[in-house]
Image (cartoon, rainbow, N blue to C red):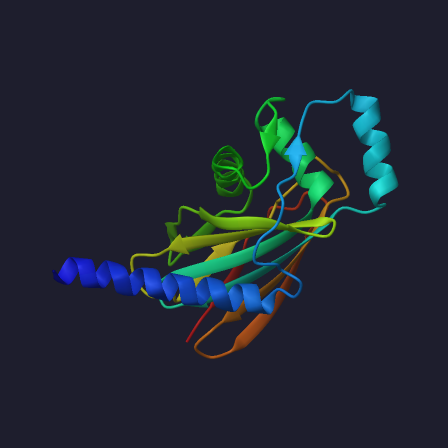
Amino acid sequence: MTLVRAAARRRARLRASAALIVALAPGVPVHAAPAVATPRPAHASSARARAAHEFHVSHVRIAVEGATVTAVARIFTDDLLRTLLQETKGASITLGSAEAHAALQRYVARTFPLRADGRPLVPRVLDSGEDRDMWWIALAWDAPAPVRELRFHVALLFDVFRDQQNIVKLLHVPTRHETSHYFAGGATDDRVVTFR
């Protein structure tokens, strides 16, 4: 019975952390219609991408509370679709589907690695949805103990766009201490943040 209660408390904390992250990410809707990625001729998707926006940027908000790390990443929908097409080797995929979440989880594990107190963490996709021309992805990582040091880099979409920029805000929830980080030019140097 104790294990059941502990699991329920952990799920409740995770939902609360995810709710905090969503609250910190303005414009994130509760429900959204899925977007579909299908293979297109390279010249057609390149022209559309240029017409959609002239820059490639993501905004990531990370929250650390106890042994739980949550994040919401906001990425241009067309950029994410192109990335998932590459990740799934051209297979048609619907954003928001179980298949898309599985592909996103593999992609995030490779391009957004987190280490808590020296231990690598495994990401989980909690949810995702569309907000105008952006797609948001809610993520969570569980550490074995409260996080004292977080080491990470955010290389989302670096493998697809040379000019990709990733802007990160990290919040330590108990102290409300916030730091900002910027990743560009394919840089994968780790940032280290220590919490007291």
